[in-house]
Length: 306
View 1 (cartoon, rainbow, N blue to C red):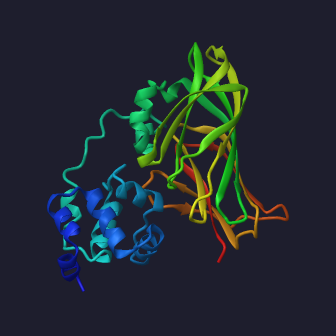
View 2: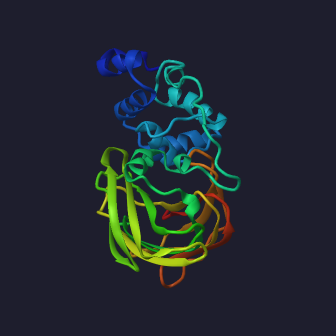
């Protein structure tokens, strides 16, 4: 059954189909149908279309929009899944947006990986990513016994590529309504913090103990604390706009270890995941991934208890 009969009973959806944006129609239709993003993701995958749950969430909340060929295929399938009239979502996308100036070779514009954070970065007058090189990143992700994200401990080793570099900027995005908080800052000071709760976005300054000249390095450590959410965490990733010499990601499970855990990479938020082989989880209930000389993009782990 197509959605026409349902639309008769849903006056708000009928109105949105006349005047609403792509995000408004998608969000309302998902609520009306009672479909979770994970369920929609599985349905799309069953039809040979891979879209991350993060990308679906971005589309739903207007933080980004589908533009790639694979993403547009997903939109057409969504119209069927949500029992919407044909082209009701596609017609709201409009012409492709201009990408503007290209990032320097070997890098990705941070607006592509952090589309919900652009306004916050502007408010901070954030320095360009090109001021610092990421030599080493170590993140330890801890889940609680309810399989929810509890905290992330991060250690960064950074090298200045210009003179008078005195800070770095870190980004966070969270689907839960309560945004994370940075605590236990070491070898630096927490500066200004800007948030957009509706978009789930946080941008924070970390002020170095001393101003760096080109070639000098800084080490900073901090903990990102998360409030308990409603959903189990099934993946974690870090987004890189520039190459990193070494990235160590550890995920600790306070309860039972998952049945499987695999690494994955993405070139963009709406790009398909390229997964690797299954990782070993030992007596410590911790999985780890070490990546050296990684290019820009997304690197993470995903796991499953079933």
